[in-house]
Amino acid sequence: MMQIRELVLYGLNGQVRHLPFQLGKVNIISGKSKSGKSAVGDIIDYCLGGSSCDIADGVIRENVSWYGLLLQFDSERVFVARQNPPPGQQSTGFCYIEIGEKIEVPEKCDFVSNTNVAGLEEALTKRLDISENLNIPPDGQSRDPLAANIRHALYYCFQNQDEIAAKTFLFHKQSEDFITQAIKDTLPYFLGIVNEESLALENERSILKRKLAIEKRRLEEIRMLQGGGLQRAISLISEAKYVGLLYDNIEADYDSYESVYKVLKSVNEWTPVNAETVGMDRLSFLQSELKKSEDELEQLNQDISNAKTFAGETSGYANEVEHQKIRLSSIGLFEKLDFRPDHCPLCANKLEMPLPNIDMIRTAIKNLDDNIQNVTREKPKLRKYIDSLESEREKIRQDIIQVKSEIDGIYTQNQDAIALKDLNSRRAKVVGRVELVYGWKA
Image (cartoon, rainbow, N blue to C red):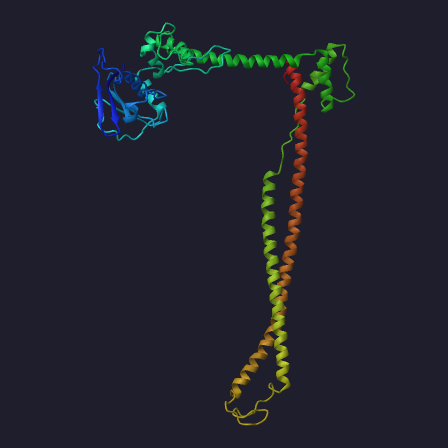
């Protein structure tokens, strides 16, 4: 059971207005006209999960920040609060709920929203012991199934002034769209006519209905396949010949049931030929090896290019040094050096800056001659290195050709297997139709 202990309004100016109720007694609110009495019911409805704030525009809507209710249950209290919608709006999703055995109304509205309207409804519905239920519309009606909750229970707890005097309806909000049907769907549950076992029975009924629909559809398919009599048998024999299940020279006496039966029975004895694709592991290995060889080939091409470039630069260096040596030889620098360092060796005049000594010049000339001999000596080794790289490149090229050929062979073999698999599939369809029509099993 749920009772309201207190209704509270939190003002925008920080003031709080309390309206306490006495539990277990009839509470009568009296006051002058337009003093806010009618708004009490709308505030309660809004705080209990109403989708719209129906509080009339005026003093309350203009000055309240949050609306709150302190609810008393059998063994605990629940405080719920909802934010007053901003001007121009009729609802907000900001909700606050607090649960405890002896909680009191908070004195400040520094609430942080900790649930939404759906969560608020669910929490209160569970505490009212409204068990799991579901009203499923009769066949042929398009509306969705409906589960009773606290919002439906309020139809039987409230009555506005105009509803009390109404002659055409009895329950709260019954005049609004769709509410009449919701009352019809949920009233049996609240009256105890529908018990908790009914949901399990209804679920079982739904499962059986789905199974029945499936079986009906399957039966209709079988009837469609079995239709045609002799014409159907002739069609099946033709299909069997087309996919190779029967030889073209096999003829059935279509006037004899035994003859047709014998031919179709032989079709039913067909077994598929194994057509598994092969070599997939080998294919993966070969593709990996192909990638590795192609990478090696690319690296070899780069090495050969670099080696040839270096060989060309070396030849150029050797030719240039040889040319310089010939020029120096023409003036006899490679012959015996006997000039004086402080005189010019050509005109014999005395020099202001003495020439390097003879040993230094002789050493430099010897080094130049040695460099020429070293370059000449290294040329055969460089050529041999390039030849070895080119031989290795040719070997890798041949390996790549061989691997590609093996990969192509696996692809061809698998294409043949796929074609056989497709033929098996088409044959199996014909055999399946024969089994379905005549009820045989191989």
